[in-house]
Length: 428
Image (cartoon, rainbow, N blue to C red; front, side, top):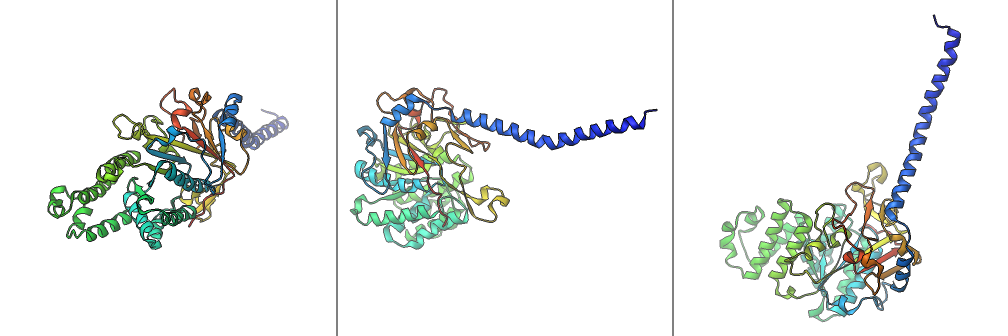
């Protein structure tokens, strides 16, 4: 029989070990997690490169979005493009003012008058009607849908930018005023329905709305469509095709490309028109990513595209800035019932997003600035460098990895902007 006097100390020792293990496990796991995060962030960001920094310091320009004398780094070849895309991570305020400055510059230097918008066809129609008439109820109507959907587009800076575009338009000749060209996948059913009803009524096409909305085949639509001219008929069928794309769940970027291609066929004035727009960063990437997905810019540059040799993209990165996120994308306990939340985590240097090579841009710039860099200048190391081509995101499925193994920075962007200390967008 075991001696009870000896058993008691042994039991106490075992109990202490168990309690100590329970207490230390969270600490150990936290330390291991912190080490793993530090290693991941260091590898994702990469180190600094003296040759890259030397080149950047000689090919950079401070941009003041409120002044006209900007963008001296753009050369003659840059303006020969037909489609200009500015890529951003939605939620920062500074790209909105940069967007308007670029639009005005490209209007003056390249003849751009079409704002290629990340909106659908119906939304662009009502935005254009606002630009034409000044009826701000139309502007509020479009933004109301974004606010109800808790989308980042429903922000004050974007709203005020369109008001500024209308004021600017009033100073321009009628044939050079800015118009929106909406090519995105159908975003809002109610806006599409309103456009369809008003369009059919304005063109005196009766008895067609129910058929069109239910997407009956074209034989059902043949008689009502017979009274329309071909351009008007094409416009109606274009909207119906977008409804079909929505129902059939076409990839969003593919719909964007098909829409732009269709509109340039429907509207003769678009055949050679130059266009510019602010887009989500991923849409502006020129090659396939993440195992075969084709972004908008990639499709525009693909073999057989009528825009293949006429597309240029500019990327924006942000550090030390705040980002406005929709509350629906975050845990309810974090948002505390707020529709939008401002966070400092979405910068290009972490703690959530990591752009390889961003440290070089940071090293040669100052706080509270917007800086333009020319990546494709003479003797640029970016011609043979993969820096700035990889974006790692801690949220699963959000990282951007090029499928091409030899992708270089200049294959992505001719120029990039670094934004420092931008406030977040403000919700309407």
